[in-house]
Image (cartoon, rainbow over all chains, first blue to last red; front, side):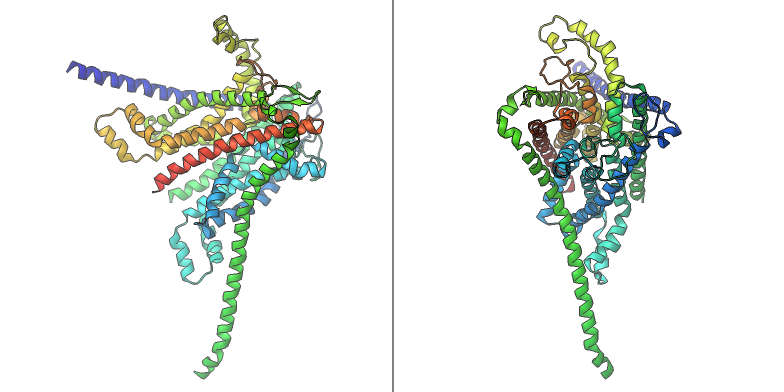
Amino acid sequence: MSTATSLHQSRKRKNAVMMTLCVTAAGIGLAWLALILGALVYKGAAGLSLDVFTQMTPPPGDAGGLLNAIYGSVVMTIIAVIVGTPIGVLAGTYMAEYGRFSRLTTVVRFINDILLSAPSIIIGLFVYELMVRPMGHFSAIAGAVALTILVIPVVVRTTEDMLNLVPNALREAGTAIGAPRWVVIKSVAYRAALSGIVTGILLSIARISGETAPLLFTALNNQFWSSNLNAPMASLPVTIFQFALSPYEEWQQLAWTGALIITLTVLALSIVARSLTGRREDK
Amino acid sequence: MSAVQEALPAIRGSRDAIVRRFALTDAIFHGMTRAAAILVLVLLGGVAISLFAGSWQALSTFGFSFLTSESWNPVTEKFGALAPIYGTIITSAIAILIAVPLGIGIAIFLTELCPRPLRRPIGMAVELLAGIPSIIYGIWGLFVLAPFLQTTVQPFIIGVFHGIPGLGSLFAGPPYGIGLLTSSLILAIMVLPFITSITKDVFDTVPPVLKESAYGIGCTTWEVTRRVVIPYTRIGIMGGVMLGLGRALGETMAVTFVIGNAHRISTSLFAPATTISATIANEFTEAVGDLYTSSLVALGLILFVITFLILAIARYMLMRIDARTGA
C-alpha cells in the first residue's frame, strides 16, 4: 500500500517537474522573442520620421533617409513577383492537376521543398555566376532574378497545396457538362483556390522583402538614387547590413529604423495572408 | 426533317472544329504547366552546375587539401575551408542543442498545457516569428546581445571556469562579445520558431484515441507525452530538427553580424570565428583574383552539398509521417 502511494507520489512529482520545465521553456522562448521585438521597436521608432521616406541615404555623419533603398527593394520585389508568380502557379497547377499522379510531380515536389529551404546565399552565388560574371557588372536585374528564384518555390508549394484542397466533385461537375480540362482548371479550380494562391504570393513577398544574402553580390548597393535596372541598385536589407556595421551613429540609427520598417511589412503581409486562408477554414 | 439532315454535316464539322480547338488549347496549357514544373528541376540543377563550374579552379588547384587546410591567405593565395566548416558545424550544433529542448517544451506546452483561448494566438505568434528576416536577428545580436554578453555574462563565466582543465579552455580568452557562442545563441533563437511549429504540427497528428486510452489507464500528462506522443511522432520531430539544422547551417546574415570573421579554429567558444556563409557574405565582393573568388564559390558548393543532404533527409522523414497520417 505504502509503496503504491509513494510510486504514485513520485510519478506525480515527476509530472509536475516536467510540466514546469515545459512552461519555463515557453516562458523563455516567448520572453526572448519579446526582447528582440521590444528592442527593435524601441530603437527603430526613435528614428522614424517623414525624412526616412523622403530623403536619400546620407553620407557618413549626415542626416538622411532611406528613400533610394526602399525604392530599390520595392522595384526588385515587384519584378520578382511578376516573373515568379506565373511560373510558380503553372508549376503548381501541373503538380495538382495534369500531373497529379505522375512521377515527375513527386520529383518536382521533393526538389521544390529543397529549393524552398536552401540557403539564400547559394542562390546569390548562382545568379552571380549566371548573370553578373557574364555581364561584367552588378545590376538590379540580377538582384531581381535572385529574388525570383526565391519566390518560385513558395508559390509552387502553396498553389499545389491549395489546388489539392479543391474537391474533385467540383472538377467532375465541370467535366460532366463538357468543359475541357483547361476550362475546368481556369474557371473551377483556380476560382476555388484563389484566396490560397494569393496567400502564397503574399508569403513569398514577405519572404523576399527581408532577404539580404542573395542581393549582396547581385544588386550590390548604391549610395544614390538609381532607377537603371542595368546598374547596381540599393535595397533596404543590404543598406541595413552596411549601415549597422558602420561606426557612424546616424547610419546605425537608420539601420534600426530600416529593420523596423521591414519587420512591420513582413508581419503585416503574413497576418493578411493568414487571415485570407483563415476565413476559408472557418467556412 | 430534310432541312435538319442537310444541316447535320455542317453542325458536325463546326463541332469537330470546336473540339479540336479545345484539345489544342488544352495541350498548350498542359505543356506550359509541365514546362514550369520542369523549370523548377532545371533551377536546382543549374545551381549545382554553376557552383561546380565556379569552384573548379579552386578545387583543381588545391585538390582534397581544400577540405583539410586551415589556412586562408588572400595574399599568398592559399585557401582552405577547414575553419569555416568547423565554425558552421559548431555554431549549428550548439544552436540545435539549445533550440530542440526549448522547442519541444513549447510544443508540449501548446498542445497539452496551454489554456485553450491562448493556444491559437501563441501558436500564430510562433509562426509569425518564423517569418522575420534574419537580418533583424543579426542587428539585435550585434547591438544588444553581444554587448550584454561582453560586459556581464562572459567575464563571469571566464572567472568561474578559469583554471579548470578542459572547461577552462572552452571558455578562455578575452570577452569579445562576438564569436562562436553569440552566433550559436542567435541561431538558436532563429530556428526555435521552426522547430516549435513543426513539432506542434506533428503532435497534432497523434490520434486523440491513443492519448485518451493512455490517460484512461491513469497516465500523467508527462507519461502520455513521453510514452505515446513522442514515440508516435519521433520521425516527424527528427524531420523538424533536421529542417532547423538545415536553416542554421545556411543562415547568413544573422551570423555574419556576430561571428567576428576570423579564419582560425579555436577551442574557446568566446573566440571570434567564421562560418561558410559569413565568409562568402563578407569577402565575396572584395575578393581580388580568380582563385580567391573561385575558393569562395567552392565554399558555397560545400555548403550546398551539406544542406542538400540534411534537407533531403528532413523532407524524407516528414514525408513518411505525412504518408502515415494520410493513410
